[in-house]
Length: 263
DNA sequence: AGGCAGTTCCTTCCACAAGC
DNA sequence: GCTTGTGGAAGGAACTGCCT
Image 1: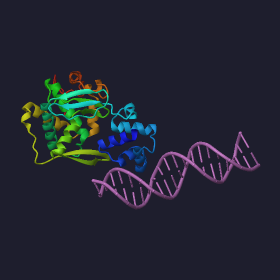
Image 2: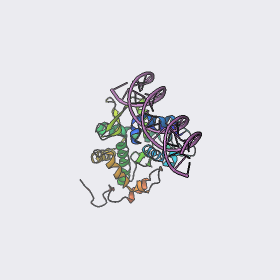
Image 3: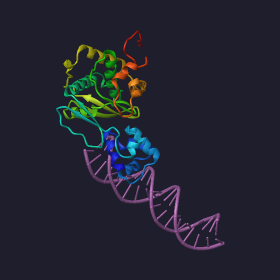
C-alpha cells in the first residue's frame, strides 16, 4: 500500500511529518491521513513526494524504490530485503574499511561545519573518488555512486553509517540549515581515524578536496556535480562510470594537463 | 428545465493526548 | 523538549428531492 510506503520512506530519511506536510502545503494532520491511507494524494503531491524521496515518479506510484541494488560486503552476511530484479554489487571488506576511515577523517575534520550535512558529504566523497581517478588513474575508495536526482549517491553509505552508529563511533544529529532539514554526523571524540590504510598521495588528495570544496553549500556542490561528465552521461539510478572522468570539460576537470587552476 | 433547501460525504485544521 | 496520532468541529462540493 502506498500509504505505508510513504511512511517507510519518510522514516528512512529521518523526515518529520511536519516537514513533508509543509512541503506539500498541507497541514500536518492532513498529511497524517495520507500516511494512514485515509486520504488520497493529488498528482502534484505525489510528484512532490517522489521528488523529495528521490524516487522516480513511476517507481513512487508503484510503491517501490527504483534502485534495486543489493549491497553485499564480503565476509558479512547481512542480507538486504528482497525486491524483484536488482543489481548485485559486492564490496570487498578492505574497500569498506577504507571508506570507513576516510569518512571518519572527513567528519573529524569538517563535520562540524554548519554546511556539512549528508548531502554535502555525498558530494565530497564523490569528488574525492572521481577526481582522484582522473588525476592518478587509480581508485582511492573506489565506491560505487548512483545517479540520483540530487546528484551522485554513494552506495554503501547508509549501511556503513548504520554500523558506525551502532558501534558508537558516530552520532546522527537532525538539525536545520536555514529552513532545510539537515542530517549531521558527529564523530565520537574518542575515535581516531586510522589513516595507515591511506598512502601519502591519497591523504594529500583528500585534504586538497576538503580545502577547496568543504565550504560550499549542498546546492553549490549539486550544481557542480550536475555539470560533471560522469554524472551527465550516467543513466538515472545507475552507477556512474569512472572512465568518463577523462571526458570532463574544463569546468570540473582537476587533472593538470596544461595549466588550468583557479583560486 | 431551473432554482433552492436539505443531506451526505470528504477534507481540512485545531487541540489535545501519547510517545520518545 | 519535539514528534506522532486521533476526535471533533467547520467548511465546501456534490447529490437529492421538491417546488415553480
